[in-house]
Length: 66
Image 1 (tube, rainbow, N blue to C red):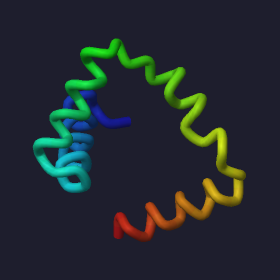
Image 2 (image 1 turned 90 degrees about the horizontal axis):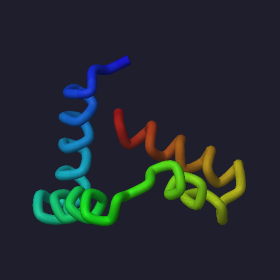
Image 3 (image 1 turned 30 degrees about the vertical axis):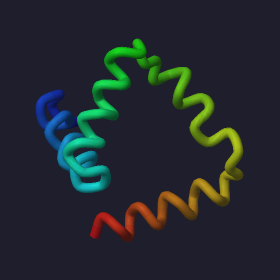
């Protein structure tokens, strides 16, 4: 398991790579000011997807990482 510092660093790199610096910071700011509840957010994240669709998206993500 990664340390919290390593996890945050990797997350920031991914956010800035995919969103750009400005939108990555806007995203983080929106989470902080809204008292973001990850558990509740996660419950609704994939509610409209089948297990097959989630599996396909995971495969795309893994291939994109390489």
